[in-house]
Length: 184
Image 1 (cartoon, rainbow, N blue to C red):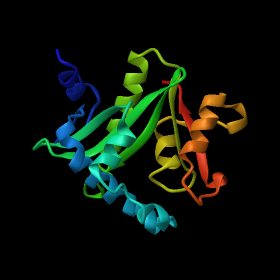
Image 2 (cartoon, helix red, strand yellow):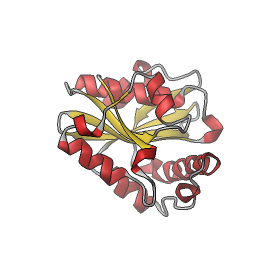
Image 3 (tube, rainbow, N blue to C red):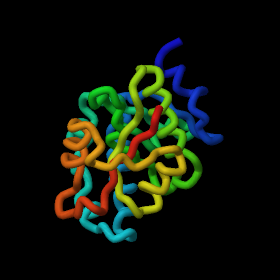
């Protein structure tokens, strides 16, 4: 069985969707997904995120370089979401999760997160970490519903504190963000 075949049945994608390995040909579509999803931040008080989308496929590839990318596709194999993750010490860090708003609230994002958690277990890592906004419904509350809990920065390993600082958007108060962990 190829790695791509293993992704489809395992992660419980909602009907009409599946999760598969990334292909370079997906990148233009994933850039569009990212930028459409970023627009949701505007209505939640963060227009600066919506106003600073990834500018090109090269930007998307730079963000994903050195990470695993899992892709959610609709029945016609059209990318509608993705998750980017990579090792940070003995944790698997979820760097980015985006779902096209036209496919939101259907379980696509949850399926992608479960796929990353499964990859964490397969790799024998301690857990999955991420940084996100505290109060935006599709950020910390969404992840908490999937079993993530806040990891206070003063209790986090130095490597994860560094990731938190690196992922803090420019001109955003650190108190608006949270480091979260799932035990894997």
